[in-house]
Length: 408
Ligand SMILES: C[S@@+](CC[C@H](N)C(=O)[O-])C[C@H]1O[C@@H](n2cnc3c(N)ncnc32)[C@H](O)[C@@H]1O
Image 1 (cartoon, helix red, strand yellow):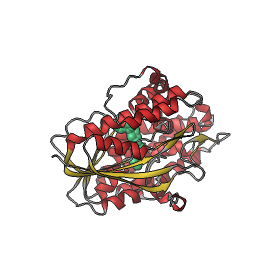
Image 2 (cartoon, rainbow, N blue to C red; image 1 turned 180 degrees about the horizontal axis):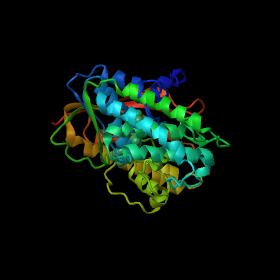
Image 3 (cartoon, helix red, strand yellow; image 1 turned 60 degrees about the vertical axis):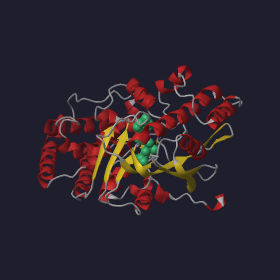
Image 4 (cartoon, helix red, strand yellow; image 1 turned 45 degrees about the horizontal axis):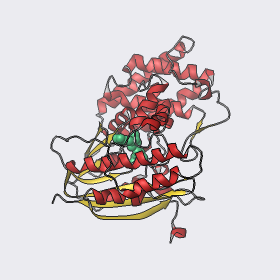
């Protein structure tokens, strides 16, 4: 049966690239719109949808496009900003003002190229952009700030900063050919006319998709999903989400360029601090903190301790550290599933898209371990099914773990 499971690119971020707002900025671990649509197909219009691991707000936006109400959470402030910008309706006047402001900025910025413009404190910045490209995008940023203010100053102008983020990534040497990010060998020197043309094209794409009215409503709230507080007495009917996987992938890694240029990050150590709050994060300080991390909740399924023990006793490099990493991942997911319960309606349904991983030949069966946590926490009707293969060589799959909640 496993040999027939396909990679299904249509269930990944790749499917979203041409889908209007969904294609504004990519995050490689984002799931495909199609996957959320499939789950939502049988959900009533008045159902309230929750995604506690919002990322680029795929769930929130699909739900709102279907006319539902959605609430989503993320720990990363940039993703909270991006998600809200994607899910908002923009009036015609606002789009006209943006077009006018950008025309002004484009008149001004060429005269700013040789001045000392603000550039972010990105380590090894010349690895990302050639020095001339950097001067041009820094000048364009200054001209845009002169027209619209800094990123979070006026939410009606968020679309300008989304287009700018897209510009900086498209002119950078970052390469996104696989489910992560790497650098091309060299940076490209872009002519100023090309940069302008590219920005105008990107902005056109962003503004035309922003014209489409969204029927429902979605809001992204900065929340730690391990510790969910009340939602103004709102309870949710459906949880549709894709939490981080225990695979040592840090979202902050590919978000850094956007976050620096929009001033969500000032210096490198802040990235590690944000990633320490993220489940499964390993960026910077997030890895060294694992050595002193203490279990807060010992009442976990026994299999979680067993899998950590198997990793610890294997001969791999850093086996002890990675055993703590895996233990902390499932510990944090357990805290999340526990704290989620008080905002679920009686009869609420959960759908978690999760991926398995391996450490030194030890299979970490995420769907089975999450199912055990759900069982221990009183969820019912727990079942899981494979939805796609993640990698052509290794036995890595994505699963949908579903469950129900009843108050009794
Ligand atoms: C796999 S991504 C979600 C991708 C999303 N489905 C999409 O389509 O863009 C997981 C998200 O969980 C967020 N996250 C990690 N730990 C969190 C926590 N403790 N509380 C809230 N969000 C968290 C990460 O910042 C990341 O955006």
